[in-house]
Structures are given as C-alpha cells and as structure tokens.
Length: 362
Image (cartoon, rainbow, N blue to C red):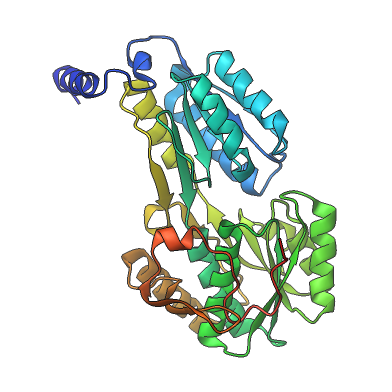
C-alpha cells in the first residue's frame, strides 16, 4: 500500500472514530507493548502452548515494532485481575487474557483503562475497548468422534472434562454426535476434574474411564496426561489443543488443534493502525483456527477418506456438527432442523443422546 492510500485510510479511521482505543498508537513511534496472560504453564503442548505459539508468531512478524510479555500459571481469581491491571498500568496497549475465568476481571480492568485494548478468549462479554475471540473446537471434536465410532471395539468412549461450561459441553456433545453418526451403539462417559490443568487428576480420571471399559479416551484439559495414560495402557486417545503424538506415539489417533497466530497478527496490525474495533470472533476450520493433527497410521484408509470428505464439507458449510434434530439425553428436542444458531450453541447446558453420564447438579 502506498503512502497516500495509507494516509487516507488513517484519516478516514480517525474521522469515524476519534476516540477509538489504540488510536494514539497510530500516532506513536514507540513499540506497542503486548501482554499475554496464561492460565497454565507454557510447557510443550496444550492450551497455553498454542497461545504461546501465537505470541511467537507476532514477535516474528513485527520485530522491533512490538514488545511482548507473558505471565503463565495465573489462576482464575483475584490474582488474574492483579496481573491484567499491572499490564495496563505498565503501558501495555494490547492485552490478551487467554482463559474463560478471567472474564469479569478483564471487564473490570478494561473500564479503568479505556485506552488499552483487551481481548478475552472464550468469553462473551464485550465493551468499547474489550473484545472476545474463540474457535469452533467442536468441529474438530465431531471428526474425532467419527474416527472413534469406527475404531472402538467396546463402544465405550471416555472424556475427561475441566468444567461443565458451554465450550466444553459443545466438545463432548459434538464428539458423541460424530461417533453415533457412524456407530449408533457408541456411548460417551465423562469425568469432571474441576481444573484446567491438573495432570494428576487428569491421569486418574483417564485411568478410571479405561477401567470402565473405555478403549478410546480424550480430554478438555490442558495437560498431556490423558494421552500418556492411554499409551501406558495400550488404548487409543485423541489429543487436544496440540498435536500430542510424541506423548503417545501408538495411542494418539489425531488431535483437534488450535491456531491463534493469524488472529493475533491481525489484531496487532489493527491496534497499531488505530483501526481496532470491539467485537466477537468465533472462527473455525474454514478460517484455519481449528485443524486436525496427522492421523495415526492405524486409522484405516476408508476412515481417512471419510474424514477428508467430512472436513471439506465442514469448511464449505455443508456439514454442521449440530444440525438438527439435536436431541438431549432425556429425549427432548433442543433444536429441530438446520444448523444450530450460535446464540443457542453459546448457551449449551445439557448432554445429547449418546452421552451416558449425567451432568453434575449445580
């Protein structure tokens, strides 16, 4: 883009939004300070590791134009507010808070620092200088479920969950629907560990599920413990967040992986240009935010072909993991026909048919 076009674009943005958060950035030559708040250790795989890969991508892309900082293992409590507030006070113009439980703390700090842009992962609250972003993890889960439905011998599939919030329930239900789409006898059993990152509890839950005849296990938690437990017991597993095949080279069938780098780069560009506007992003496979890791050689050729077709259909919109009818485990129709609207997906608080466990009572 030449200088004249750049100047016109900048002037137009300034005229239309004279007080946009981050606009001062467009008039500053100082590096943009970008902060990341992580709920668990970075490690070498998992939720936080994938966000860290995104941070490294912006460092590579913007070089000396930005300065980044991260704080890992920040609990979803008052300590989160302290860390987020300290980043804003120390001049960070952009802060990514990468865990659902940070939501209310981000909202509170965002009100106190209107010139700082805050992005909160997987939440639903927005503000003038606070946006949200998420990925349609359930799309990968559905495809994992299809593979599980074909490959299970016991028809029992194990799932280790962190907390029964809509994001996690979407994954469990999509996994069950995928499995039942090719194997009506498959059932999913769930154990909640009430933690995003507790390798000991995750491993114990996986072992309990395998003791209950589950021959394939997966998880919505942050560590690699479930995959490792499956490897040790000669069972199959699906990784989550990252390709976890090195933790279970025999067990790992594939993984639903997350990719944040392109979104982070776009956001940095917008804040630097003063053009960022609040909003909500929910990207999926067609956006490159959710992918499948390479399939285990043990997955039969006909199943591979099926998954390639379904993945293409999902990207084109021909397949939706929650196309109606969506029936809960008590037989109630929750959605009659067509793709379930996002608003309805975001409030999911039930198990679908095919999940044998019961949701914990609140």
